[in-house]
Image (cartoon, rainbow, N blue to C red; front, side, top):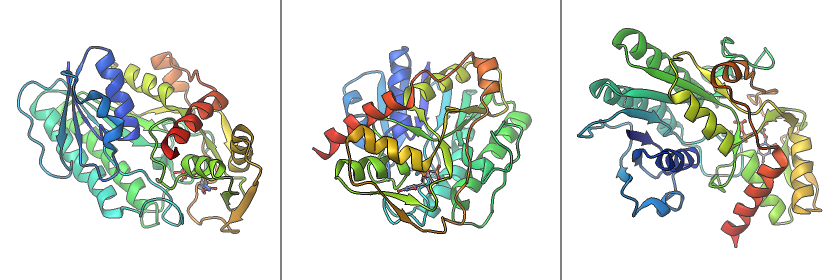
Length: 317
Ligand code: UDP
């Protein structure tokens, strides 16, 4: 198949590209490199199965020839805007990638009668009042809060995807991606995995925001890619959660990173009151993925983190 994948130079996009090519498909990767990294796809530059188009997905996309599948993964990641670490928040670009980028990629799929897959997010559940979160939960989001540029763009993207499915008959799929980690994460995206690993490798105290009692459930990237790959070929049009249900507090997560890196600098509390809009709990209910895709995460947190720490070590030299 000839597959268009936006965000191909990103963390998830580049791993997906590798998997699709490994399965014998042709990939046309789009990226404007505002947060993507050429190093993630440099190994594909001489591969005839891969073609790179440098383009911002919020502008009209015109690709000649047959297209069988369009996958929309382009978006800046969503570090909390209050995070003192990481690249600057990209609010307008985030909204445009989720809104205009979804419109343009759906239009491309419709024009080519291609199948479509949207990379959505657990952020559509906001600060959830139901735990763990099944796909049927409508979420608890602040439409004007600091995270809204990401949450609302993705919620709009889901609505638009369903509209193209219902009104234009496009064969669409939506994956709701929970916290994922692994090699090729940006070192400076401001999120907890790169922050903690870099701090640990530099023998610094890990910066815990608030009490550290807030939870996340971390999925290793190869598990995520497997789940998405299985979802691509189903008839499921409603969203499917893909993530690892193994939930940990951020404090325990910090202790684990310090243990795995041998960091003795401990932890330090930033924002004693916590960040106002920080979701306090997050764990995917993966019943739907289990039943529909016969999918289950395989990589445990420790092994995934060891691999990720090794990658960060090569990056900082
Ligand atoms: N966090 C933290 N220290 C950091 C970065 C993040 O304690 O240096 C916390 C953050 O407040 C949140 C959790 O880790 O509760 C996950 O944050 P991240 O930005 O990685 O992702 P998201 O909130 O989107 O799940």
